[in-house]
Image 1: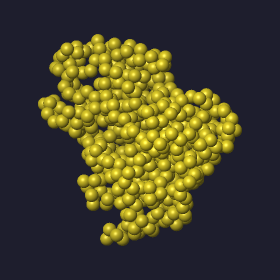
Image 2: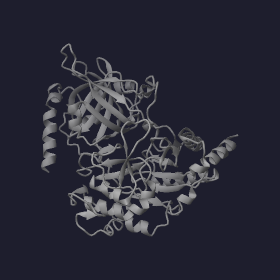
Image 3: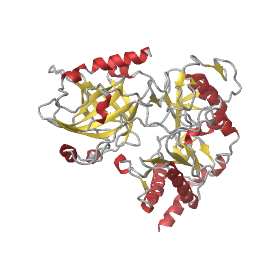
Image 4: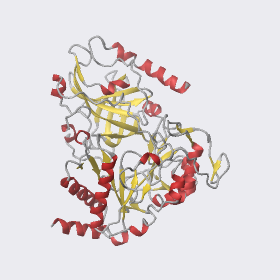
Length: 540
């Protein structure tokens, strides 16, 4: 509680310059008096602001307020583009829902659009405030328009004596980067909150923006029966050691208590990973693996880490990856999994490559991501339809929950029978399958990431099928309320009424022990080369 109080006091103090610049009897901008509860992940917002000069305001939720930068030319997906980002005063969190016109003559007078929004995580071990102090903040964005890795780098102070704090906002080279983008991204000129143009916002026409910061939506009530089971206790009984791995602060709460779930501790996480580890490790071993860490639990700072730790636990190795100077994490044993629990790693996101061969596709992952207004039964129907299409191409698909609102359809591949097939071919194959599905049912599916187009439709995400792309591992927990798990399913379970919220750290060990799900995964590996031939033949 004291920690929360310090954050609240800090955010109030940082908002003094914001309030001093505004007359809230004239502007509809929020004063910051509204209490905004923290979410499972820190949020970000980018607002297109047509003031004296058109610019894009980047806002990152940090310690109860928005840290803000004015990106003068807007963000670019081209890693070669270094966009000036001028640090400005902190803003209150409810500013993330503001869309409208600031009166002429007031500070920042002009039209404001919620151009993008979503969640963000810092990369690496360094606390966010230390990274900002040192002038380099690496981050991962998960928004409607901006995805993947980015970096904010502070420039040296202007030699002419300028008091402005200038940074550069740069896209990392990853699957979401687009060399030679030529600002095509900025042509996506509708609000993600209201689907309005700047002109419509200025006129006050169109629908009201959909709230994000003050949303208040919560995961539906889960089946209490499934959440009343204790975590299965595996072999280790020592209160502070699991598989001989010493667990410091074992009673630290990582997932707070909810209406349907008791609190889940660091010890619980370690015991869970020991219990399911023999099943899970086959999907991790031999592959680089990114993790989501939360040293103080999901209510504290959460960050995404792909590179090796300073103190590598037993069973975790460092692997060199071409194209990156820093070694990556690789988890090759159950002991390594438990060691990552000691490091408060809540989520595991392995590459989809073949073991010990990062340039070779080892599996395809199709992420079925529903937009607003889509019932989960419709996601189930999409998974079943996709299964049929893949089976006609000679592949053997498997299904799992994501631990969120969607489903993953995963296809194991046989590299020995797919000689000469690389990631470009794998991605094109996945894209073509999804494009055909979207073409046949455009009212149900789409393959464009644009959030405003996804209402009542399912985004068929094929982008996880690339060399450095990852997908959450089967049986990985998620850093979300309720300690949900990405649960492997039999196709018999993929039917109307499926409730992903029943699969948690407390229920899954017993469920997976008696489940037949994915038991024939390895024997289901097929040739992608043969599937491509069938796909090409079917198109003729």
